[in-house]
Image (cartoon, rainbow, N blue to C red):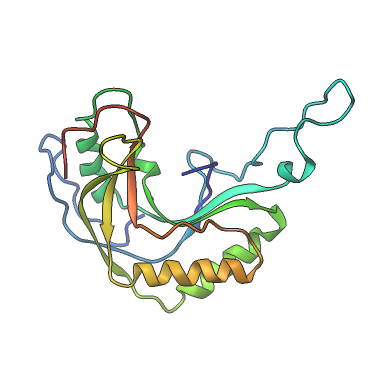
Length: 207
């Protein structure tokens, strides 16, 4: 399972990374084991979703107590280094007000959990282990890039991801989360790897 901040790697059999001085327009298929992590970028431990409450003049906290005790998390598949390396090379074409995602933070989000009580973390780990115990490695392919919400007004630049059975697995995972009475997002699953964020002209380079 993987850990996450508000929104939003170990390959099983790594191959030699592509030459860094040779831009990659297409990536080779990668075999990625399904072992979702509860993930929070750039942090080794789970952090509270909210900062400690501050006291107002009336002596009451300005954030409610429940928000301090929840975590913003997500299940994700880590991206192997032999795939993140050419993606990082493609990021060099970024221009304008874009912030590139670090290669070691690249992932495929399976489910976002905006408010998880810390005491439920073990339940989520058991769910991930249960759902993946009989799942074989998948062949994952990258199919070009795209933009959220659209190319005319881009806020996110991403690499498209395809893998047979991945959508079905994400659906089972979300159903399992809901059966635990833990909140998850209701957005349709769209497998992708976020490459960069923020407004700016659309990058001129595609995979």
